[in-house]
Image (cartoon, rainbow, N blue to C red; front, side, top):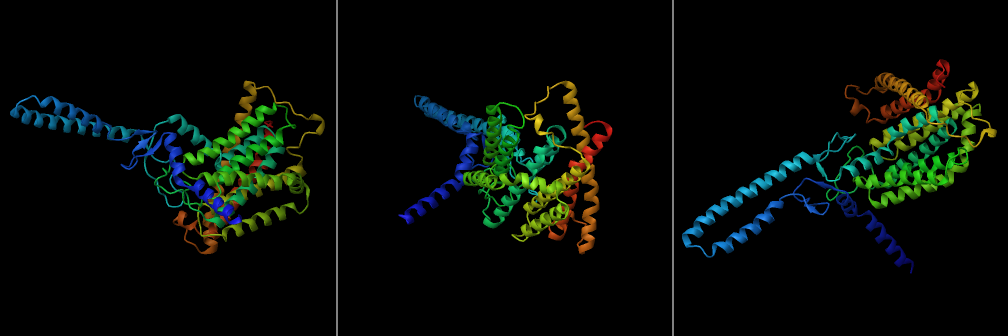
Length: 440
């Protein structure tokens, strides 16, 4: 009995991991390759449509030619053969031109190998842009922009806790990938619409994890604290989650099993860590030894993750996430002691969303624009200083930055220091400057 259940479970896992399901979903959404083997796209032949039609025309001409003379048959045969070949050539040329015009390449090249990927065809532009948006909602760059915007314009309390959830979910997801070490879905049959993360492992999908944990945590942290309809908040959280998860299958980056595992894994992490959010946030803000422990903990986690596997793009992502989380945690400690970005008293709950006026929208955009300029300047300056300094300290040539960053001694300090400073400035320096000039 137990053996049968185990065998059935293994077959189910293999079925959900089959890349053919990913390829079918892509074709259903209008994605197909440009190679001759990629015959069907959205259920319609993608090349050489004219051959069938010309074959039918030739058969009709052959039946008509049966009543003609032998000489006329030979002449018509030559003429029809030439005409048929000309039509076939024109049809093939037309299909080739159409395929060339509609063929696109992945938006970003592989961050490890520099591979730009193969061309593919998009028959449904709406789904292409929709799922491109969905996959960006799970990228680190989006969260590094989203958290500061939410912090500067909406609710610093919620933003701090979201960052804690994001750090733990992404860290555990990346480490789990490096332990399981399953490859991405095979291509062919899958079309690689995205190449940037193709060198990373596949199981579980960290996009699915963050795309589940962040909107769900955002809903749980804001409902009751802010006044808005329950159905609206729940619908937005579910839509965000579904869009991110489906986008990873559309992009050819994950199997169905990867997505399901990422979804369930993030729920498990939320169940375990959500009760500790208040304890963690209070400790980060008020404990006298919090700065030392924050720095030591995040560096230690980074060193541990770098021992799990050889260098890959996930190493840099992990250090970037840990650095950002450490910087924001340190900033919350500073803000608490300076009285910057204080939490509203309990008597004000539930908070009322402000009326959306042109002046409010303009103020939010101004804060975001100025804040992003400061953060980009911080990143550029720290990057220019950190990489040569770290290479010099460890005796690593700095001429080829991509190659130098494949050394743990360079990548870990670079990402940690640069994005730790970015996180610190996002939560402390930018609000501090806003308060000084009257923008807060």
